[in-house]
Length: 359
Image 1: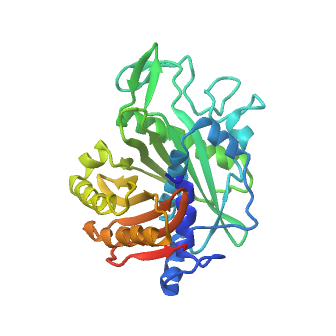
Image 2: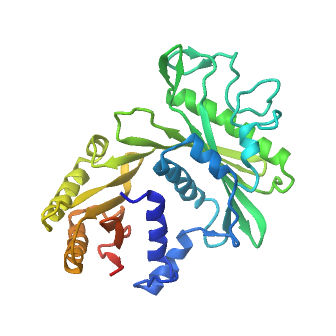
């Protein structure tokens, strides 16, 4: 299966007129450009990229964290009026405590007063028992939004564990205890950003959201955003979120939306026997408050000719009629022997399917 980050790059090719790509409907592309953030150029990467990979090995989860943060940020920082940069402030040292005096991902202690994980000597109530020395905060992602080269807002993601291992026993953190920790931690982080960096004045809004990992190895869910805090001037607001990313097909997908799972099975059946070699369909679904809002599917085939590949693409496009909900975005990619040949999209509220084909 193609990595999810590659799917996002391909989706951008569908929406925008990039080199080598043709958009089917220029007007739709122009309208949708307001829905996607553009990177400030020239793009400057951050040394935190190494830190992120070392802390979370699953590339799909890392992608979900950052793309999900972008989705949440759209409510506060309109994509058609700002460009983004990554980690302009929280570099590797800021997260890693390399110099011994800082280290946001470290534990709170005399030598690290800015640590956002609980002090190893303090009791932490998980709601299912008291523990010490638990690591809750795993990583922090940062997006910085600029308008005419002036900082206009910041979005931060706190990636947190859903449980703590203490004395060889798992203690799951209840939603109430997690939210209490996140509110305190978000307040501390927002204050730190304003006090540490001169560019972040009180006029710069800060969005802090929390992505909770799913540590259950038997679950087809990888986690999702559970909390959001927004700091604007001297005011702040908080709200609980309910997001979940689940593997398709999978038990979690079937439990969350039995009807869509049945429609997926019908879609998969249409593709199964087109070619003598088996064609596979898999993917991921995004649920918000128990409702599917996005379905990403990957079709893997082994066609031996252009005619066979085109037949698979045609079936993939026609088969999307099986999916009845119109308030879901459907993205489908067709891969044949490791190469991407087509990208299909059925946008929310639409019955028609857009198609990009590389043949």
